[in-house]
Length: 411
Image (tube, rainbow, N blue to C red; front, side, top):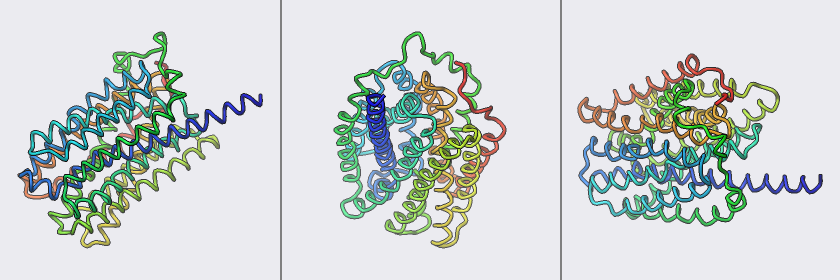
């Protein structure tokens, strides 16, 4: 018994380190993904990009990212997820660094395509590991660590990227961010070694095919609400720095402070929300219903805040609305993938999240292009903010009415 207890504690520590490194990788994921938004005020001018051209460059990431999630989720359920994860990180780190050498729209789009390919590992891979290794009563805080990383990534990216941008220009932003991400591979090789040796794969007799998953109505419904959850977040991530500097007239320093406030709020709320949801589940609350209502609250908050940002008059009201947006995004990010993990269970978590994330991230393909067209042809950001707010509020309604009972399905 004593030996089993010691082994259990050792396994627990290894899982904790792996979860922490996954969270760090997601933080770097969003630092690298959001670098184009930070660099936009100088990059757009130097490369001669219109708003539509910039929207195409942002959108290009998702042309590969969304469909690649399908394939990567399949890989995670059939091969060693730890090795697949490391390969994805290496691809996106190199792509980020090379973006600093982009000379125009075409090269920028090509590098964004490779960035999307590499970053497609993040959520299918992390969900596969969490579903297999993390106990139910710790699922909230594990996903919250990733959710906080989704928030702190842009916050750190804007803060450090803004400083680099102001001091050295936009190209070093990508060189430095890419190099830092490559360094992550060193601790990952050591922390994941024991689990990598166990080859975390699903036996052939227990595998759930993508074709079988696509016949499950709950997966399609989750993909719809995932699309609506992503639209508002990606809108703010990609366009907020450009909007604050070029339309509202704020300096790069003021833009950095405002966006950092929003993302920092998001990260804190994600951690607190994950901890509280775990406490509620441990005390007997229905996990599915707890996470459903947190999603509804998050969608309402980010939808209302997006509308508020568009009409806010002055620095202080704008900061308040950005904090509300961060509050909503923190609740959404903590629970969105946790709910998918519940539906799928350990056997199919990689493939399920791969499909859900692929379909949900179609918003990343169409959203930036729609926003660019609105800005170029409708004369400003007003309709773009209204569209993002309306879709977020629609998401709240569908989380309430469309999503069925949240429980592990018999696949």
